[in-house]
Length: 417
Image (tube, rainbow, N blue to C red; front, side, top):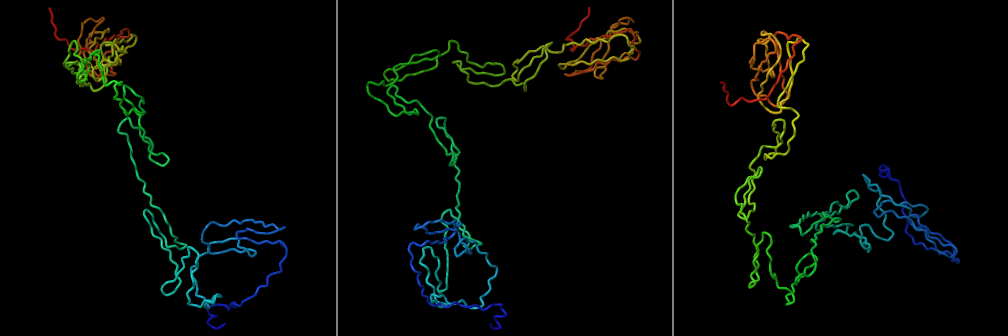
């Protein structure tokens, strides 16, 4: 070992000497038993004059950089780890035993698929040329870390189908599992008056022989229908009969205006009434529900009467008596209060409806049973209201009270004689 090799840390190695060696075949034996290992754990052997085979389990297809040998037989392969750094050899590689000289071109193998060749300078060169065709994408450079990847560019075409009339039916989504299916509506197959129809109702043949009828022989008019037939031309005319009484004009039916022509056919329908929706109208002791065209939908007995009778029992020296009542419709209110008290009591009496003071009209000046008419100032709406009678002088304990209240309107006229 010289000094330069010692610095590089290289150890000397012995090169093989390529010398011919003559192999002496073993002596032949009659039907010997033998055994031979096969790749991937397989075995081939002979015993009792019979040859037996146990196949191995090869790995999946691919390129591997390591092989595993056990007992002189190939039992497995593994991928080779790519080195991050490859040092230069300490000594030039020996010449191959085949007699090739360094720098001399090696003959490529004739095995199909071999990509090995040489460049213009005679140096070894292996190339793989892959060209992408239509709708194909090629990527990668063919190395272990960046292999070639060939993928197809498949463009999905969208198809829309719909039927233009009810005689054609279209089903399916257009996919492989659920394709679009277009079918024809079934008709009536057969021959009628020399006309032959297929299963879809299409006219496919016409029998023009004398035995077949040539057309309509006649038309009989019916109720409201007139019919005439010209035997010379074979043309029939069907028309609507004139009604016994023509009602031509415009009529209002419920919430609609309807036009009739001279044959009493409806030619126009227009909505003429629109109340903005269904609503309820109070009429006496009834509640009437009408729709938006003003037609009555229902008539029900109202749960409340049109007048209110309110009573307070005797036995309390009260200064204020109140009551609540519910209005079903908007209206002004008037009433009469009957009670017992002194003249001063009635002069200092106040009556309110919803805190709105009423106008009082005394009905007498006696100190016994006494009446006071009162009128609410304003119109009171639908809903609950309060009648409030306030006395600055308390009722006597034996004085009861009664108020009768009515929705009302002003009289058209009054007179006295």
